Image (cartoon, rainbow, N blue to C red; front, side, top):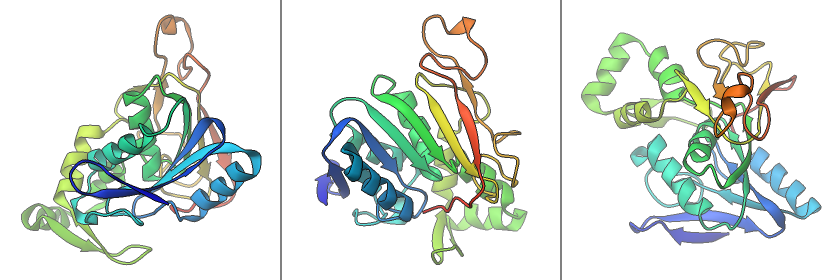
Length: 244
């Protein structure tokens, strides 16, 4: 494991694995880390097959420094971009849960770097669609007034901040087309009610499914959902995709 100062004294943890290009970059979920089950399993596959890989922890997560309560979608995306820029050549982004949202934001910000994108139970816009919209009116008011609420979670209680909700609105994607320039594969467990499809068996449908629009010269002649490099596809899998 290595550490890198992002420029403000906060050191971010990352784990590079040498190998052939493109580099697989794993982006963990909310409150998860590069030590999660999917990250470790993918790292083992990359090591076995000689594929280059980068695992990382956002600030306030895993072995990285910083307070979790100071984090926002923009801050964690910037953390990932900072570490991504330490890698040479093309990358394949693999985003789990919140990491799927961050992967989309990175692909839009670094279109020349991203060769492909894989979302595993990807959860773009989750701060709005899965948090804010699920809160009772009195909970919303308390969050606005206090700035922080202690929320129970699968890995223990955590501080939910008004800043996370408010700043997340600057990065919402699902109310319009997401103009990607690379092939996209979305994996979603049919027994998993989180992520893109909020109900089991309905992944990829409704307001919370992304519209992957063509991008680049000549895109207008291709069908909806087809990118310059390929076509976005949603794959249903029968096992549950955990948020780790």
